[in-house]
Length: 411
Image (cartoon, rainbow, N blue to C red):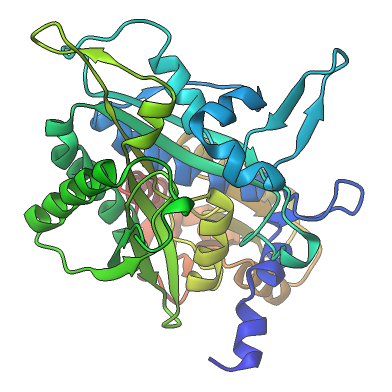
């Protein structure tokens, strides 16, 4: 890909042109602010993920954005990440940190009362913002920011449940990325035995974890590349690599198996014989972070989002400002909103050609020109974006139904 093409599809450039997000010097670098249009993208993406998680039995939880450092000392994160954290001192001298991850907090919900094997697997889901004190020179738009939002999930289960729980998460990942026509490959990221100090937990726990992930890979019949040394500090993981429309590779979703944190945080359950045992913890963020995924998606699609995701799905363009025509156009917009379509009206004094050009520049999936002919007949032939199928000669109410049905089906 040449430099000119890279500049044209850069997510920072398109984010500004499409009115999705901004940065403010007063807020600070690496802290994106999301406009109404960009927030629609975030919410629709998260809704897609959460619908699939609910189907798999995940329950929503909510945690605070700061924590005492003792939690991260127990989980093992403090030793490895303390220099990457935003530190907070309370008036009483207690040391807190802005959370850079969610797993130790979710583990505390699990640990809040005794657990029986009958309750397991316990599955938590939460979409929440995290914070890391990235160096200014390392910041890169949405790809690397100081605030980022994870569509996070954690499963607490017995060892014998690992394979099925991993396959359930794998199914969600494949469905999500398939919706955007990403080609996925898989890296099996393992511990490097030559650097034992970089990891939490014993070699025996690591071997058990890698063996279980290997069973899931075998059952799925998937091909993997070797990621020796690419494991998380607390466990091996499956790293999904997406190849985009420009033939670039991005690490996106991960499924991580963790025997170490349940040990460090003293998580237990009572088995069917009354004995106390450790659960296994599985981590999975489908998008990794919403910000980073959107950076990849904006460049992958060049801002041409599918109908269901588009912040603006339909735009009405009036030929002139005749009062009766405007009244009809307003009725059209109100009826479209009743069908839950995201629609706007361009009744500006610009020429029709300029209105059409503006709609095209904003990558709006469909636009409809309204003049006296359309007002009299009630029929329209919408202008479609070049990557979308053409629609011809429909009654306006039928067009609304079709677009609403297509959006509902995530087309």
